[in-house]
Structure formats: C-alpha cells, structure tokens
Amino acid sequence: MEQEIRKAAITRFIQGEKPKQIYESLNRSKPWFFKWLKRYQSGDPNWFKGQPRTPKYSPRALRSEDKKRIIETRRHLDAQRFAQFGPSAIKWELKKAGHQLPSDSTIKRVLRAEGLVKKKLATSPRVSNIRILKKRSTSTTSIRPTLSDHGTLKGMANFTRSM
Image 1 (cartoon, one colour):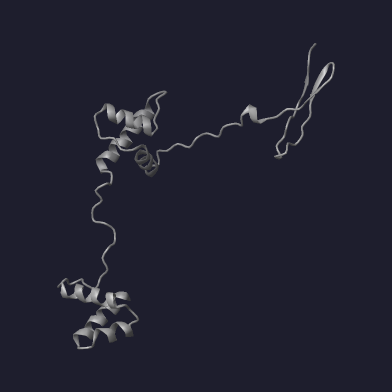
Image 2: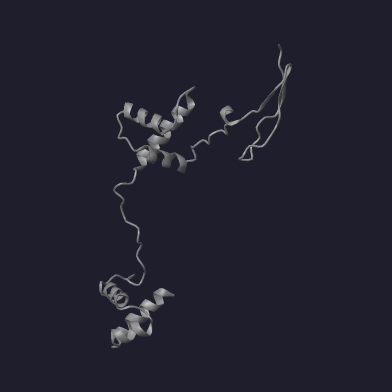
C-alpha cells in the first residue's frame, strides 16, 4: 500500500504536477516527498521499497567464534565434577587459554540465549527468621504457634525438657 502511494506521487511529479500539491493531497510531509524523489532519481529499480533501519554491521557485536568458544567452555566445565561453570569461571578458563575476554554480562547473555543457564534451587528460610515464644514451667517447655506482626508463624511444637 505504502509503495503504491510512493509510485503514484512520483508519477504525478513526472506528469508535471507541483510537489506541494502532491504531498498535501497525499497528506504527507515535504521531506517525505523529496526523500522518495531523490531515491527515484538515484536510478535504483527498487527505489520505492523501504530500507532497513538496522545497521549493516555491528562492530561491537560478539563474533560467532567467540560465542562457540563460550558455549564449549561452559559444556567442558559442566562435565567436570565439582567445577564452577558460571560466567566468572568461563572467563577465567578463556584467560588461561589466551583468548580475548568478554564481560560477565556478555557471557550470561550468550548462555541464556543457548539455554545453558540453570535455575537456582529454592532455598529454605533461615532459622534466624523464625521467632519462637517459650513458656517456661518446671518440667515442660511449651511453644505455642502465634502470628507475628507480619503474619508469619512464631512457633509450632511442644518440647519436653529433661531436668
């Protein structure tokens, strides 16, 4: 649809219509019209097609050889027993091998893209976070479950104390 509008605008210009009449009737801007006129005058047979906005080359992008090296190092470390295999360990192994060192965040990004990131196991709450109320008597210590100010339980068992 947009390509047809571009072609029609240039065709009208070639037939002698003034640019201002063309871009106003198409509800477009002056820079829009002259951009497409310039592309038409360049002689490119595909002048009416839009051009990609992405850069043709990214000089800071990680090379495919480096990505492969990171993945191979991760798999090598993962196969070893008791080895660390996070970004810092991978970086250390690459340094030992004499390779260029990407940042830890770049290594993480490559590992995540390849599905090599392992989720951390859920940890149990710390004992210091559990508050226990004790009711002392001569032979028995009773721990009653009660709610704290934050809605958490504060004790849940009865223990017998030996004298």
